[in-house]
Amino acid sequence: PTNLDRDVPLDRLTPPAQSDIMALAVMEGWPSDRFIKELNEYDVRHRSA
Image (cartoon, rainbow, N blue to C red; front, top):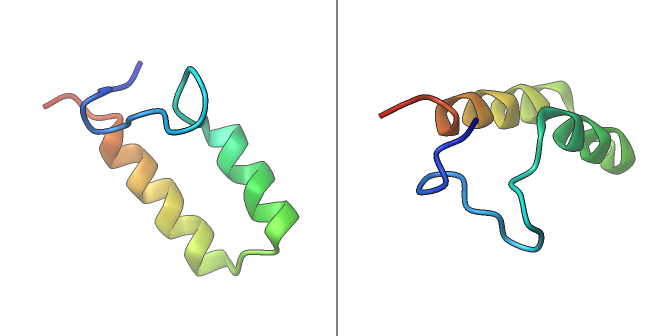
């Protein structure tokens, strides 16, 4: 589940999942610190208020 007020889907019906973030990181060759930052932000968006 997600809080759609904080995790708004931009170009699709649902917000990106962790697996989408992982795939994007691999395809774009993100450094590990950016990947960890994105996962932490994902976690914050999925917390209840």
